[in-house]
Amino acid sequence: MAHIIWDWNGTLFDDLHIIVESVSACVAPFGRDSITEEDYRDHYTRPVSVFYENLMGRAITQDEWANIDNIFHETYRSLLHGANLAVDADAAIRLLSDQAGTQSILSMWWHSELVPFTAGFGMHDVMKRIDGNRDDTGALKADQMRAHVERLVADHGVVAADVVAVGDTFDDAAAARSVGVPIILYDGGSHHRRELEKVGVPVVSTLMEAVGIASSLV
Image (cartoon, rainbow, N blue to C red; front, side, top):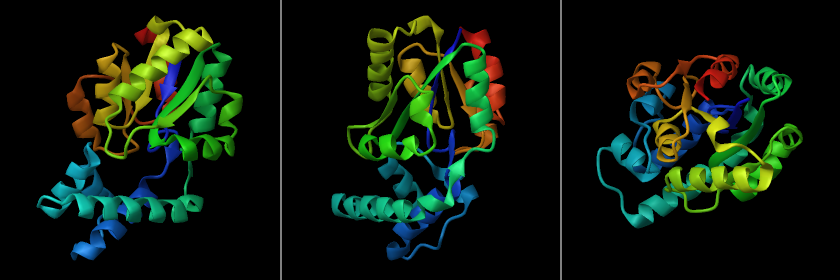
């Protein structure tokens, strides 16, 4: 039975609207107008510093990047009350559990904030592991994915061949592929569906669809 590694931001947690507000706060000091969700999806990439360079059409300095990072996280934290789980997140989690599957969360949000925040949604009761970013704000997800899978296998008895990742970004896809894990991409987050479909993996519009497909990939 499948073990799903869920991404958090933009996948289980429907926070695109507050991310867009937070990015808008970051670019305002540079004289750029607020962005839309379309703008965000048009330009989003990792490393995140490149995303801001794409938005502003120029290189940014280390000092500017540090300021952007601070503004983003302060704004995002102030808006957290305005976001919730994706509409079918609870149902998808229950469905996987009912099918005797297991699950975990791997996010690029700071680990020290992710762990207590997800507890408020009851995630600690159903997830084998919850891991966030312990590296730096511009890090790619591949290294964290490798460590997450290794811990699942060593500490939680998960069979590596049963693991499937579900996320909403190209970074999620690259991270999964870097460790040989199948990936399902969800179109409710950071990228346009038409762009996700170019990756050549299953793309879904609901998390319930993702659970339905996962068992066929392992």
